[in-house]
Every structure is written in C-alpha cells, then in structure tokens.
Image (cartoon, rainbow, N blue to C red):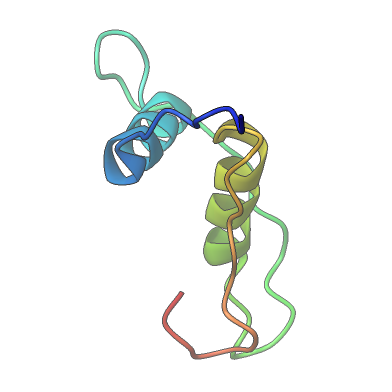
Length: 73
C-alpha cells in the first residue's frame, strides 16, 4: 500500500508562514531586510516571499516563482 498524504489547506498554511514572518505574537510588525533592487523590473519583495514559502512550507510542497519579471506569481 502507498501511504496516504494527509491533505492540508495550502492557503491557510501560506498565510500562517507570512503572518509569522511579518508580525509578532501581539501583531506588531517585524522588521526584515531586502536586497537592493537591481533594475526597474526587479522585485526583491517577491523574491523574499518566495524564499519564505520555499523554506517554511512542508517539505513535500513546491513553491514556484514566476519565470520572469513583471509576471504575476
């Protein structure tokens, strides 16, 4: 038998990852560092959010980022 993966609410898990990264226990904003913007179409915040989700979502979840600039993730 193949073990069944327990389903999860991906939207809720993503929200919790981002809430924890950007707000503390008492809803106070958390400071974070972004790298410098390299050109007009570069978006360091999108890269940072992708990195957070990639690192903090369950290991069997894949986080894909847009393949190029000015494309909705």
